[in-house]
Amino acid sequence: MVSQICPIAEHAKKAPHSLALITDKVSISYLELEKKVGRVAKYLQGINDFAGKKVVFLAHRNIETVCLFFSLFRCGMIACPLNPKLPQKTVETFTQELDDFLFLDPVQLFQASYSSEITSVPELDFTKTATMLATSGSSQKPKIVCHTLNNHYYSSLGFCESISLQENDHWLLSLPLFHVSGLSILFRCFFQGACVVLSEESIDIALPKYAISHLSLVSTQLRRLLQAKSDVKTLKTVLLGGGPIPVSLWKQASQVFSGLYPSYGLTETSSLVSMDLAPSITSYGLSLGKPLPYRDYKIKEGEILIKGEVLFQGYYDKVWGIKSALDQDGYFPTKDLGTLIDEKLYFLGRKDNMFISGGENIQPEEIENELYKIPGIFTAFVVPISDEEFGQRPLAYIDYQDGDFLQEQVITQLRETLPSYKIPVDFLPLPEDLKALGIKIPRSSLKEIAQSLQPK
Image (cartoon, rainbow, N blue to C red; front, side):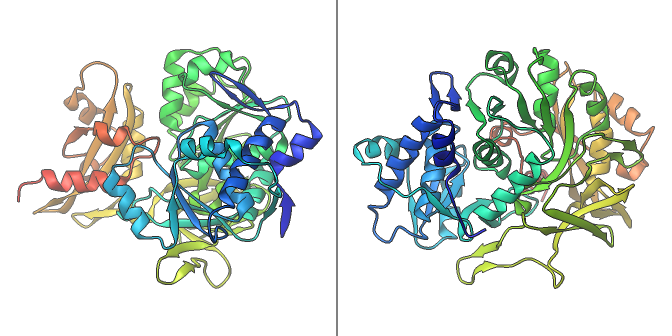
């Protein structure tokens, strides 16, 4: 696909009074949203050499940020959203990796555009770079992932061919807009003419208040929602992903939610790769389904390789531009370990997370899965620390929310399923500053903190 009318403009003509956005203060129709996006786009076109320019902004979950994304797309500019909670130094480090960029405040831009005439052409070029997203993976230096609108379109289309999403559906934006997971909610809803709900309320309160029909969650959010015992009668679809899904959590949640679907995806694949509508549990854990339309995968030497319309353009480099990361057959080596049973995918961990202790391979995700079986542990990360005798030993960071943490009891329980060399040598609370960053905590930061705590 080369070009297409903006989906907001399309639904503003088809169903002008259908709701596009709901916030805690206002409800906005597709016609109203089209006017707001058009004004911002017209204002942006007053910037010299605006086409192809990279626009960096702090991506709060608000109307202004949503409008900015689609205004940028209309202008042929590139959206570079960042976590609003990042330290200024980190923001500066990111912008140093770019060339020819602007830093804009969506709220100030929104206010400045009020006097603009709505004369922008709502046609989008689907083939050019539209977004640059910073990964929060296992490496210390984030990679900048480049997508076209085609990537986002086919990601959305493949999902909507598998799960119904209609005009009167409400999808709660429970994930951040600086992650592909949150951004994909906008694309799915706007391409289908559904409504996005932006609420400052906690998820358990927002569900019945706004009659939420679709919801995306990571495991930590699901645990908290179960704990809150919210009214979930309006929910038709709950998409679970963003990392490993403990079987114990799945079993508990499946008693509450009828449409709970585990999924697998990456930033590089424009969100979802697979989703399981009828999950299975094996010795490898919870199944993550078969490839959605417009994508495919295979396992090579234990690694998950992916190809399809959803694959990103490549990683951005200030010197070389966009560098492809595909192999000679057009597959993207994910560095994720997996296996297939009855064509269904099972995630086993990250290749670059594995470390060696006393000659034994340790996959942190295996230990984390056992920690999740212990009541009270909401979040668990295992990282290596240096050891004079064994080279490296496992250390666990946990978020424990059930009274006092009794380390000896946890160790006793882990010994029932893990060999001694996989038992963490220490347990530390998950740092509050990292928890505050959002849904995905960089494992590299945890490794760095653990290393700094060791005696020199």
